Amino acid sequence: MDLIETVMTQDLQHSQQVVQTFNPAPSLPELRLPKNATDAHVHVFGPQAVFAFAPDRQVTPQDAPKETLFAMHEKMGIERCVIVQSTLHGQDNRVIEDALRARPGRYLGVVLLPTHVSDAELKRLAALGVRGVRFNFMAHLGNPSQSIEQIIDFTHRLKPVGMHLQVHFQSQLIHDLSLHFKKSAVPVVIDHMARVDAELGDTHPDFAALMQLLRSPQFFVKVSGIDRVNARFPFQDPAEPYRAGIALARVLVQTYPHQCVWGTDWPHPNHTHIPDDGVLVQALSEIAPSPEAIERLLVSTPQNLYDFWD
Image (tube, rainbow, N blue to C red; front, top):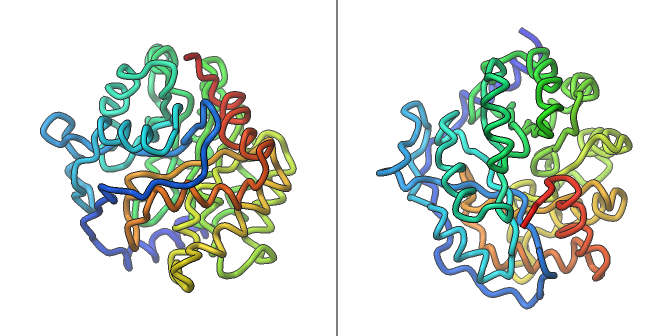
């Protein structure tokens, strides 16, 4: 058993089943976002009566349909979005397709697919607005059904349809996985700041490995999840939550300004607490503390990576 499989199997034994919800009345941030501001990482759950949840799911969250997502974005001043398929719906991507049809060109998608999917299906999804395929290397989400070698081979089929590879992994796996990701034929987007432990600071080997990867323009990182990487002690000071997560996000944005995108991660699945999306938006004033920085993070870099057409 290799390191990747060992770590994931060990952590899976300690996973807990929880019922996940989102904040139905998030606060209104003081920060005014620029035109075409992009939330590059959200999910849509259900409604279950229309889009069934996967039978092997570990949790059953409340419905978080596209209409609720749209309303949250309108309140926050977010005009563009990338919806990422959740394991809650598995490889049945109809829930994303439905949302993309509701706001074509403004809302794009990243899906879950087997590596043996047909080229015709990849082309169909690309035309609809799907921009990438995600693979999880997280214990609570289950082991990938494909090997890392198969996934990298698959990237050669993603290239002709303009899709990228999106990866979500436990931070200690970055050292082994990086060797494979560097062989990708398409850009690689890393979720949630590689799920590093923000309390360990920016000198920890896992964060250093992320910074090293980003020296290649082939790699992008989502500075989403300030609430996840700071999850053990998010409210050391209730007036200033997620300090450690914000600090790491700011380092990434300052060092690699053209390779960072941001997302709320609404409706916050598999979390230790329910974040206030208004607080997450307001944190952008510290993560990207100038008009130029926030424009790059929320508008120009997402446009270059995802190619919105609205």
